[in-house]
Length: 328
Image 1: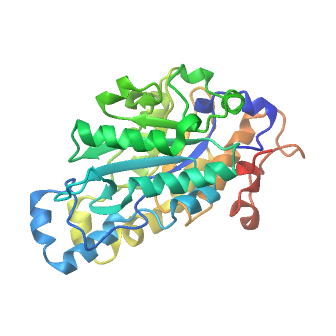
Image 2 (image 1 turned 180 degrees about the horizontal axis):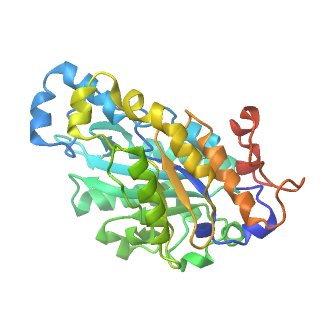
């Protein structure tokens, strides 16, 4: 974001194309920990068999890259699901997707380290699922968020006011979306309804793309950001049929090229795409492809030297995304 040309720095972030990851934290899950409270009782019983957790891992992991690696590849939106851990006396909070991941605090520190090195970068942290958490757990988590980012946190305000230029002037880099009523007590917690993320809940890539088109047409013109979840979701029978293969080999590998082709046809703007999320963001040039869509907002700039990111991005450039995240 640090190298966007002036016309785009003045655009609301809700009108830019921004790459994100689905279940962003799931690059590591703990097979030795209890099954998470987000799972059905029957699964918890089965998980007492060690092999079951190994198989669960194949379907729980949706990313290979760490937070740092995702940030370096250009990802700026993070989909976060968190939980307390049964049996722990302390109020520690962990990321979760079937199995427990790393501590939330460790993830926040990793992200903050990147932001300290790249003061021109802005990120979105979307805390959208909470499990086994009462108000005391939430207060603990919120205190950790504040401790991690401090003055980098952008307080709630009209969405259209939030531009890169505006955030740079205030030295703010982090927008936190918090899908729990306590957000009302904190100026730096944005309500979840400001970050709608319609979910197709399908294994069929054609139905997914149709859903993405429909929800974009229905997108609110003002007042919110918008997440296009370009992901396929396995059903119980999908997992049963392909138990050993896992999510990546069953649904992602074969469908990601078609999903990426859909991304290439999109345009950001008032009623266009905003944030687009994917599983296993490193398998294709996902982040680079999303970022390149912003060229379309520069009228008459296609093919000119001052175009900030080529629509066809060579691998050696897209893998580092120099033009996206190094601030001036």
